[in-house]
Image: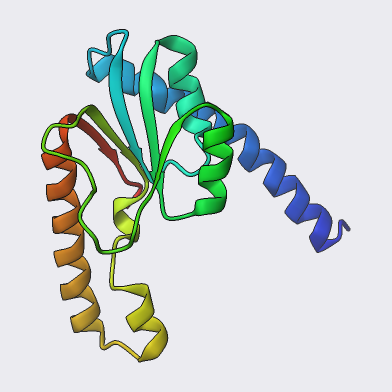
Length: 157
């Protein structure tokens, strides 16, 4: 019988292979739905280290900005040649109206919930958490619409 570590390692390998297929399919979907031309400006919200946008940059000459809350991930994105911006939770996006041709937001908006610092400090009643989370997600969506001329928002939930 395999150890739990062996099972876990196998699942990680499988997930890695699936992740590549899913990301390629998502990039295909992005190109199918948006008319991306050379020179297009793209903001990747929650883009971490720019791994996904490498697929886009392989296909088209684009001006890509990776924005994330993780400064460590942004350092890697910067090393990969992307413009970067460190986001602050709960603050408006630091860009003007229509600043980007496309805003890409992949599996991020469902994480825009109750302010994390508040969750650490106290127990949040469910109704309050849901109400505040929905308000924050709506504000985030409004910011995406404000800074992007077009947008591609995907969520698994």
